[in-house]
Amino acid sequence: MVFVPASTPGVRILVYSIHAGLIAMVVLAAPNPERIDCGTVGARYDAAVAKVIETLRAYEKCVAASDKKNDCSAEMQALDTAHDDFVDVVDDAKDCR
Image (cartoon, rainbow, N blue to C red; front, side, top):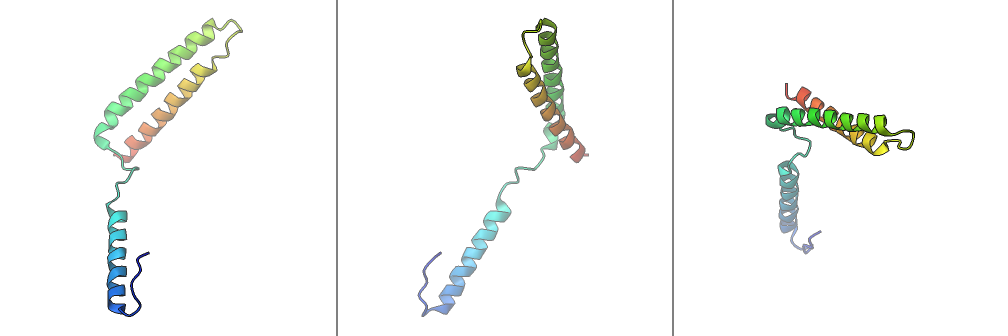
């Protein structure tokens, strides 16, 4: 908070008004991280589909070769992450229609 002498109420009001204006400007001008870039949804969707297919194949290979020795948890985690990314891009695409 800015110290303004009590003997100058007009200056105090001016200072508070300037602060309020600056705060409003910062809040309103801040970029929205939730904003969707609809121009890139198609490319992001294609990449997400390719990643799901790639990680699914890696999981499939791991399970087929595990011979009761590997639980393939790393491959399953990669598939889960790829699926989460796929869900996110599908949700973004719905918002762009």
